[in-house]
Image (cartoon, rainbow, N blue to C red; front, side):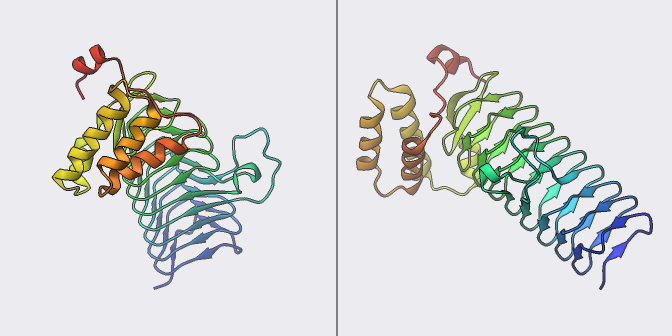
Length: 271
């Protein structure tokens, strides 16, 4: 089947539209856009120049996909927004393309849910199966690993990394890296422990979950120097890839990883 385009929609003749794509009333598709098969662009949504989108994506009403970066250094250079397959982008979300200083591309993987009023800034890299709840905001150059969850009204500082399977609670300000499989909560985020619910949903074995808990205690709660703690984890859990992932993430952090909350706060935490 060919695309189904509402007569009030504006679709540039320079856009490439896949098969069985539906484009709703008053939607706008600009030049040099590619929309993959079986995608839906709802009424009043806009897909801006230099956006490439895979199959089975849904862009809801009033979302703006592929806007120019909110970066004073941006000088109009050609850059792109690349979106994988089966993403759901809800109402009023804004996704911006990259800048020259960030490699020229903002990239979003497959199977992500980006809820209403979320913002994904220039040069962000998002993996797969991520959930961004309403009004969550990513500043420029942020990286989100697979299965990460960003709670509503939260904000992640530019150049931060959020590891695979990490959880950021609602109304949280993230100023440093969030290690894989950890929960970050608070007006200025701190680590509250492993994301146990997320680990179970990801299908990790009980032994792997226990190893992740041991890694949290040794890195964030013990008095052992960080370098020694990482070396000990490598020795004690050499056969647990999740622990190796945490160790590598902590070692390669440029902004530093979030600290744990104080012990008294941790005991009182609802998480």
